[in-house]
Length: 357
Image 1: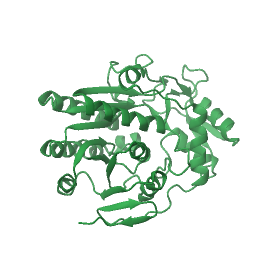
Image 2: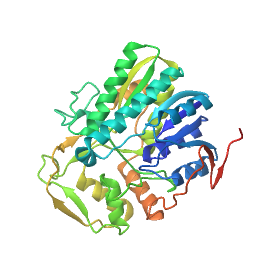
Image 3: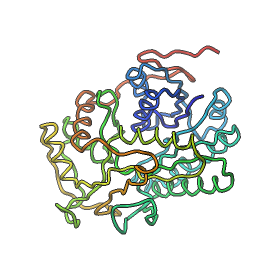
Image 4: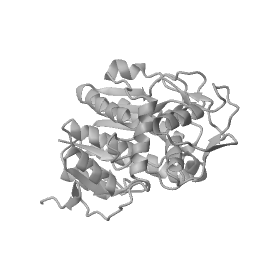
């Protein structure tokens, strides 16, 4: 039996592929490479010594996605695929609603048709909007402030309705906070298109000399140093949370929601200082105007995940900075290779192999 991973070539998806393969799972990856590259999957195969079955498919193409279900014995799905830039979602809301929501409905319809009723969904702490208090628990008020966050919240509601209509479904919804870091090998990491939207890849792009200085949005928040405070979680800890969430739905029915965060907040300037300490690289920065809708402080209460999944974030902010820099310094231009893949294909380290029919 195999695990289908949508968006598996992306930042969090590729790290989760490593953890699943190391745990003995067989995986099938579906990705359209809108914000990822084939090279990441080749490196996952190299790190694990395992084959990856891959389809280059847009989830909106229902007929192509259905063939994946027809041709494979899928046991469960981990759903990462989706557009994820907050600013872009504000400028192009219809694009985000169509892509993120419609593709999820298509996926769930096919899962239902082929009786694959185990799903781990990649949600986000953006569903909480501007938190009324911290730490944020799963029962905190939900109020997404932008189209991206609203797509995550709407999908959560769709999945809850789906479960209530058919209690054979087993669903884990994971609300992540701020994933950073990279695999300790330096082989896979975060490779955003254009100027990064998130703090750590922005810092590493400055450190490697591709950007002149870090832009820090606002300095007058009610925090330790006036800059925004966030809960940064190492991507490997996050990936391991997906493996445990998958284990849970294999053993029990129901719909379960978990925060995945460290339970500790760091300000922007604290992260900059931690990066400089971990790497010895100085990061020039400039304070600019705060962004609309940014909360002063946002960090998780992760106790439910610890209690029910036996999951806890283990890696420190030093680890996150050190691993991020190892990835960026060894790969200053990210995944530079971007070959066309045969579809479908098996990925094995440096080679593309066509599966026997």
